[in-house]
Amino acid sequence: MVKQVFSWMNDAFLKMVWLQDFINWIFRDLIKLDTEGLLFKALSFFFYDVIKIFILLSFLIFLASYIQSFFSPERTRKILSKFKGIWANIIGALLGTVTPFCSCSSIPIFIGFTKAGLPIGVTFSFLISSPLVDLASVLLLATIFNWQIALAYVIVGLIIAVLGGTLISVFKMEKYVEEFVTAKQENVPEIDYDTIEEYKMTRKDRIRYSIEQVKEIIKKVWLYIFIGVGIGAIIHGFIPQSWVEAVLGANNPFSVIIATLIGIPMYADIFGTLPIAEALVLKGVGIGTVLAFMMSVTALSLPSIIMIKKVIKTKLLIMFVGIVTVGIIIMGYLFNAFGHLLM
Image (tube, rainbow, N blue to C red; front, side):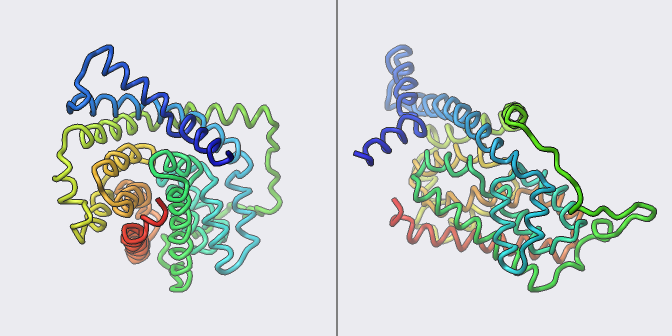
């Protein structure tokens, strides 16, 4: 009975089966479109996904932001400073999952952490996990795949973040951070971060902050959602399955590498890539290939790489991109090989 209740809640609140049925009813019975036609498939996919994502996103951003209100950048820095070695990388990666920073807005935080004296490897663990894994991505992934796949994605994302930061520490890459990041300014007193008192937010403050975050993030990502859902609708409704399988299907041994490389030039967050991922899954693309595409878009987008290049030197940038790329590709092939065990 517990399983049946959980399944009902999953269908009602995450997958929103009722919404899909309603959208299908509109196009099938009111507009009288052929349910086997390409237009019906594309339009039903587009409207269902847009409405579903905005409903889920509003709720999830509010919930995540309420949690994140307990983790200001200064508090995050204080927590990270208490750990050493690989444990510091693990905590850095975990804190990256509950902090409201995308790949580009993480850069100022990276600079602040580095100036405050945190090890470079720890800051990179944070920098990798922050855009890659968050509460919203877990729940939205569960709507496309299932909870096992969503949690596995989180675990793999954290492993990549921890390994990436650890390797950067092992190879002592501190000297490849630009001088202006680590240099102390003249005639500016050094800040004792441990003596800074944080503003204590009340419950009303946290609710107000969470509502503002919903408005701000929706304002930033709505266009990417429409573009992502539009691309997904085209893939789902108009591109033949045989074409998709030829490029990204299981029979192509380079599908994971192709998906990773396709994702790098794009700039979107996970909310924009999820509809494309959903359409690819429906076309028979392997789980690992789809997840590799999503990870490369969120962690290795070209604009974020350009921004990172402004604060680190070429050797460190190459190492960062190389570690994350290799990690994503290995993850993709492993999920393609063993993902069926999680379905």
